[in-house]
Image (tube, rainbow, N blue to C red; front, side, top):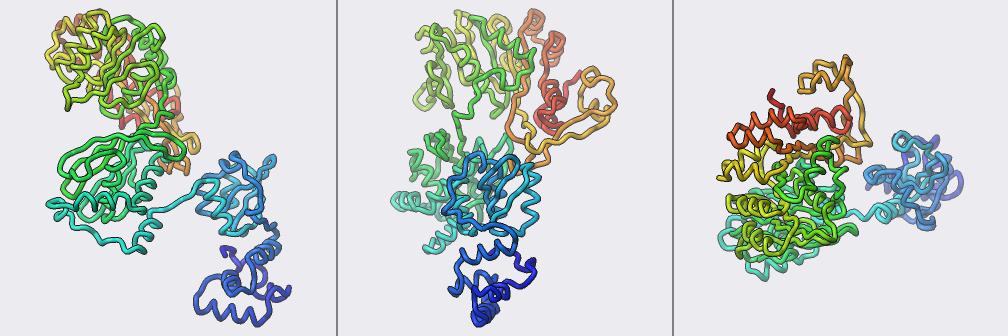
Length: 581
């Protein structure tokens, strides 16, 4: 039992004897047994059969001034009540909320004298707390029922050990020869291995991770989730499960489990926590085994509303105006994982009408959009971006989206498509919007072709949003804010500036952030910028002209989100660089 018996006015055993629940001899036997094996007296009495759990809990409840209930006989607990207390708290403190009336929350606890837990609940929920006592086993069962069953990595490893799992494998030997395909298949279908893979996948989906990294080293494995763009290490399975896990993932994604020398890519749709997600799986041979990276594509989390992506009002107005132009090229730039695909999908979703023919070629097709013809690029069979683009022009398209302009051939075909009356969307890898002009020049595209076709360039980055559950304000001096690049015009004459940050809580896994928004730099190709492009002006000169024309830079967009309390100064510094005057 978890009850702190020392708090009771009289020892538990004496109280039970006084009311006749047990005899003095039974108490003596229990105390003798307790000396031998330790543990609480209540548990010893129950194990000896001198008292039932129901009787003991009812008695303890009476002594502590709380009611005893049987959760197995209690009715259903509503979802609203369950959501009032986080899973991490109920599991750590062994309690569960069962009822709420007005401002009174009733909580079943295994230890009704845990005043620290009740104080925390009072602060967390803002409610008065009414404590009832219940069986620890019944509370744990109820937690698994309402919050979802929890199997830990330790439980799975213990299960494997109890079945006599093999010791750590000889990595070097396996890289030279390896196990035969039958052994690899049987390992991949082993129940504990399936549990480990399922646990990693469900954990990542619950944490809203975008990627899972399984990394082999000489004597260990490392597992990391990328959450809101930042990698976080999580509990990893033992090294000996490495090959079995990789085999399991290869079986799931129909890859060649016998091929361990070459990189492989696969894709699979699975159902995790009643949610369908697509997994893009990449397997890469390394010195100590195969590294696996899984990209999680959750269609339910895809935002297709341009107004909710993070555009500043004036940038959004420019963007929406230019995306309605019937022909030309619109480029979205930024590093991998900066949200370019989401911006393009949102744009195409808005342009998708019954009288418009839209075709895309992507590598890979991340999300399927109803009413849009999406083609998966397959360079291994000759279906490159350039080849797909050529075919599109014979398909009578109105709007074309190319996943990425990677080479001169693709760029030239995209330009020809724009010149012949099509609206083309594509991406480039550059640091900012003006840099796209220089990138096209470097690819061999003549400046007069760029000025004739490119109508707008958008650069973007993703910034983490402060968790709303633990958000707090703090003040800094005017000088500190100005030193980060914020202009005096934007902060006014205030001597102290109020900024915000996240303290860290269970809702955000103590990171202080939850979710992300994009910061956008939208550069409209004005007549002045066209002249600069024709003169092959540097990126810096083009950027100066764009800012004079009203362009909000990435740093300015991030600064505005800092001042609005959406994100932190640290995030701004992490994802953007200062504008050079």
